[in-house]
Length: 198
Image (cartoon, rainbow, N blue to C red):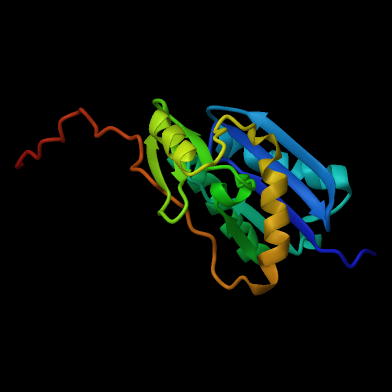
């Protein structure tokens, strides 16, 4: 039996469900599905398929890594809630990994595509924020960094699992969502019900 940790990483922060199972540096199984809806219904079956493919059970896991955002409000909540519930039930650590860490490459601006020609960007020395695509490209140029927010998220779950494997022995807090903008939810247009005295 290997002494390397068995870590499950997953992410639903955009229009996808991504998951990877690692034992040490070896990827035992991975899945990536593009999906703009139904992430809550697809995530657990995908995770179970990965475990089955690798021939392991939930109880064999040493840790869970989860993408905490930024990204789609509902997608982030789905993954973080699943990770927290699994960690509690399995009594193992869940490690939150933000999208900037998972995508950061030397010499490049950590940027994540966002709706309406915007990106979530982590400029050097600044707090991450939502900004127009052209503004982020200019900021990257001024800072002498390359800029490629279109990078494929297909390897995202593997990177999340790798970072979780490094951090889980020291993790004491449950993962929390990283939101950089408000939810895209419009208030209800229906009038509230009227109360009738009777």
